[in-house]
Length: 258
Image (cartoon, rainbow, N blue to C red; front, side, top):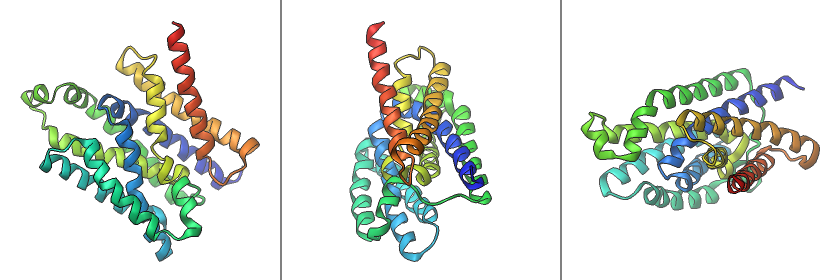
């Protein structure tokens, strides 16, 4: 296997680990559908970057984090629910992204395949994934408490609004790492599907984390395998998401049989 492909594969595994963990809180906070929309916030930046002939991930990062901050502001100042706030920003982001992205680059922007990775990109991606993993474990108690009762969290001295912003930014960082493999359309799939499948079997938070992360990473391995020997596409995203969806379907069947 070419060195660049090896780096890309291990970076995809790091992304999968981060996605599996952050997805657990997305599910508990009832943000799974809203999280699917957050990845689309990167699309305008990807389109502009393609037009300017610069690394598309730079442009995607700008609009992704600006959009995330705007979502938080809308939620905080207008009282809109998180999913409603994201929906407002999403509609504009998707329209702008579709309008400015060159036609020849639109498939890559939507479904991944944004090129190989060099050592700098690899190290930055690993570092970003590590930040997500560390942040999840540092915030897990506060996030869990604020998820089930914001009033109790506030009375315990937890500043809920800044915590929500940090969570959204960490979530967006996870999406950013996944843009290279999954694109703006499917980047959140490994946040949604593994967590939803793991929830069928987890009776403790620690087990929930482990199962979700494992399913996410196995999905990447399966995506690489099936894309190599079956689909032969320029991106592993479709094969990866199909496998994760099948795992979720199997989890429902197994849970019903218990």
